[in-house]
Image 1 (cartoon, protein in one colour):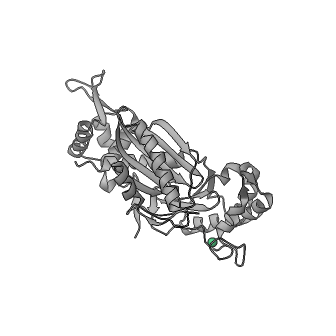
Image 2 (cartoon, helix red, strand yellow):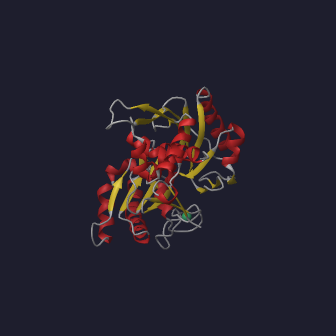
Image 3 (cartoon, protein in one colour):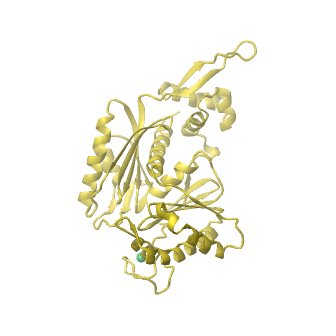
Length: 355
Ligand SMILES: [Zn+2]
């Protein structure tokens, strides 16, 4: 079953949509919120009043009066006290950020990770998160958003597989973190977090994002909404070269088998890269066709070295396209995943408010 997340589903305008509108505007009146969201005056008032009661927003008298009588109030987000934590759990390392409801990053953290075994990885995650939580326990931590690499069941909060971690199978990571830290936890697949950080304010056309390091993750937006589906968007082991390179999964010619050898000890391996730039464009083209996408976003550690292969990669890609209707964009991955995870925590926390 597929479901969509993200701002844009106006049939269900909710607290987080209202908060997004206030965040983007920085200062806004009740009338403007009602206009922007399409909510009735009554519907808007209910949500704004709840956000106000919770201390997430504040309203001040405007200095300008409009006509006679009513002075419109100016609504802004309270930046102090309420925060969320974003976590990016990646075999390259752990990253965290603490964010206020205005979307400002208050503090960032990073750490190495041990992920050979389930026990090591869990230990790494918990001790890293403990440091972040401890330093902010004077504030009101509303929720934790977790970006997980591998295969994720976001709805159940289960990390089904984590690359390179042998005995990591169906780990109920949400439950583990809730039981340890007592905050609401939201788990998402890492490319979705990155895409969420890119689209929550700019809903766009259909787009496909690839996060490329030693493996590859994919996220898709359709009409500006993120497409979710467990196991639906796994492309790492798509066989793209029949009888090709041997892959860790035991098959031959998977996409991942062409990525794994590209970067060894932070050194780009030229021969491997020359093979990779022929393989990845095939996948890019195929997925753009499947999802009728007009935008492809490439990001991830390997893409950080793109000045060494960007021209070849684009040349290969556009030879398959009959027009240049599909745009290819490169996105720096720094902080996008963890920021997206934190924004997902904001959305989750705010939407759980009963109106
Ligand atoms: Zn494979």
